[in-house]
Amino acid sequence: MAILIKNGRVITADSDSICDILTEGETIAAIGRNLPAPADAQVIDATGKLVLPGGIDPHVHLDMPFMGTFSSDTHETGTRAALHGGTTTVIDFVLQKQGHSLREALTEWQGRATGTAVGDYSFHMAVTDFNPGTREEIKDMVAEGITSFKTFMAYKGALMIDDAQMVGLMQEVRKHGGLVTAHATNGDLIDTLIAQHRAAGQLTPRYHYLSQPEVTEAEASGRFADIANYTGVNAYIVHLTCEGALNQVRRATERNQRVFVETCIQYLLLDASLYGEDFEGAKWVMSPPLREPKDQATLWAGINQGLVQVVGTDHCPFRWEQKQMGRDDFSKIPNGHPAIEHRMELLFSEGVMKGRISPQRFVEVTSTNAAKIFGMFPRKGTISIGADADLVLIDPKKKHTISAATHHMNVDYSAYEGHELTGKITTVLLRGQVAVDAGETKVGRGYGQFIKRGKVSF
View 1 (cartoon, one colour):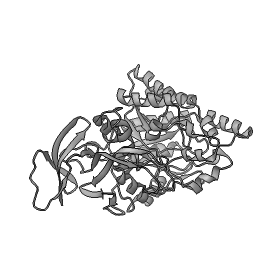
View 2 (view 1 turned 90 degrees about the vertical axis):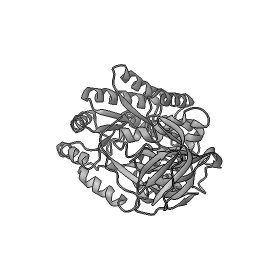
View 3 (view 1 turned 30 degrees about the vertical axis):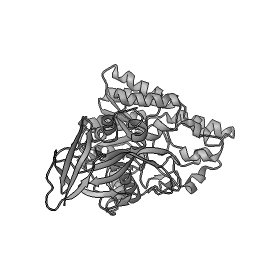
View 4 (view 1 turned 120 degrees about the horizontal axis):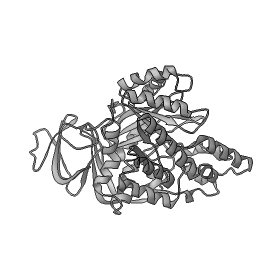
């Protein structure tokens, strides 16, 4: 079926115009003024609304085993919630188990996502045990369309790899044109501080924050950039939160190195004052933790300076019952918070509507840059003839309030409860089908497709 979207303000990373968009099948067929409607076309009047490329969130954890439990959103519930928030494609993380192969991990995650996802998805491969066998599998993962490989510089004994393994992985990934990403925090220092606080009986959620001071992230970010520079691999730091870490990226640019940077919506809008002495702060226990207002200012500036290319979520939700696992010890609180549904509306309201970023920059950091960095452009991340018809309509003046009572994520609280926003997503198309309209889901379980990715085109 064809869909004709008429009279919308169509915004891409490099254009802003009033025009029509015609979709046929799964792709965009025509863009122009006063396009005629085919006889069988559904016509959507977008007068007064913005029309944007579907959002891409390259950092989500769906149905992920972690700290003795699983993140509470499945590939079905998580991608459905993402669609309601204008995110049409997510990239989830496959976690290799130590002592096991990458192929085993991929098969496990495919079993969770295939036939269940409502929105489109892809995978990063998190390498937690780099050895000769793993090295041989890198080329196989690239052939599968998994061209990005995550490393953890923290969570020793579970996910963390050492610098020697990091060098070996980077060298192999570079040979095959891939990308290495890093959770860049100093795991040894963090573990030491956690042990000190526990020994002193300092067990409330605030000590999660105090166990991961800025230096732990700044040091690891600089070390990751240095090793990436030595190996020549494409490098990307996930969920960067603070001034010290971004300054390490600035330093890397002085030697003409490019390090891609992702921050997350929570680090732009929330701060460490939420970590009080009561257990309520567990809602915002994540790693890295929330930072200070000066770090928020740095990140907003970094977006406009082009140092921060992507705003994701690190969506890793746990229900309140799961968070209770750490009621008596902050180090046992499952790390993560829910955000997949609200990233785009929060950033639009607090960024575009408050004049912090332009509409074009909004499109870059929520969609286009991720598509280019992670090998999906121009199929995803733009509005152009032949691209997937992933489109988001926003009423820029409509006000609404975030609440757990109305969100679609499988979690019983909101990290943004009561936040009043300006700008509401009204309609979402995914590959030429109306996926969400007026708050109703129009596509079902299994509509989402795995997106095979290529190499960096940024």
